[in-house]
Length: 155
Image (cartoon, rainbow, N blue to C red; front, side, top):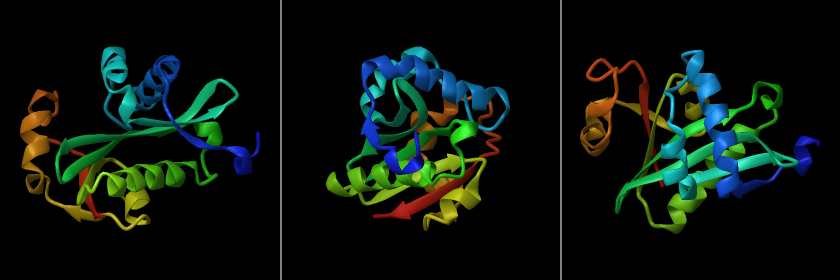
């Protein structure tokens, strides 16, 4: 399949095991935080995917926190599919949905800030995101010493 044929689509239930494996393959390398399969199923409506046939080769999720705040998370592109603008397409799909929902601010926590900065995200202090920190971060094994970079996009 060529990159011109790839489409970003909303995830389906059958995509959950593929998303789980893709995300956790990168988590095993320390490049992102792991996700439990149950968490992927619970949040399947948040995910966008790119498929090669029936196999998910890339994913990203838009998770809503409040009326004006959402997070892009779980961004993963299979190594053999990187360099084809797939990650950019996934982020653009997330931002498009955020705008459709009238969400004012989208953030991410990442080990790859340069990727998001190319898409006009701006670095902020994690304390700029108290709803995220107190909703989920406190459960993370890295809390309070988070080593991810926080970035924000204003819709």
